[in-house]
Length: 181
Image (cartoon, rainbow, N blue to C red):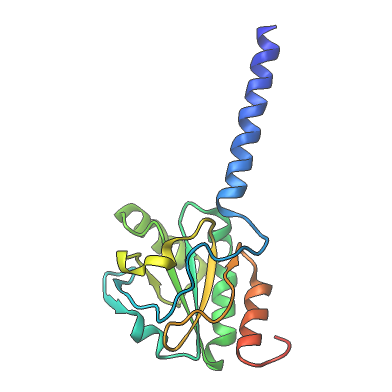
C-alpha cells in the first residue's frame, strides 16, 4: 500500500513540476500586458558588459524597437535566441531595433551564463541588465515576453508572450505598414 501511495505522490509531484515549468516560461497564447500601458518609457541601465545605456539612445535609432525580456533559466527564452538574431538581421535595415533585457542579469553568474549563451547563438543585438527605473516593463508574469515601442519609447503594439517568431514578424510588418514578411 505504501508503495502505491508513494508512486502516486511521485507522479503527482512530477506532473505539478512539469505544469509549473510550462506555465513559468513557455506560455504561447497571447496575453494582455500585465502593467499599465507605457508612455514614453525611459530608463538608464547597463548593457551585459557593464557600459551605461539609456532608453533614448536605443529607441531614437529606430522607427520600432522590439524589447525581448528573457532569463538564462528559461528554456523557451534560450531556444529562441538564434531566431531573434535571425529576425534582427532581417529587420534592422527596415527601421527596427531589437534589445534584450536579461531579467536575471543582476547576478554575476547569470551574466556570465548569458554571455556564453549569446556567443553560442551568435547574438549581435544589445542585451541589457534590468534596472529599477524600467518599472512597468519588468512587471511581466510570463517570459519570454516582447513589447514594441516607437522612437519615443511609447508602447505601439500588444505584448507577445511566449517564443513566437511569426507573431513578432506579423507585429513588425503591421507596424512598418508592410504585408508579408
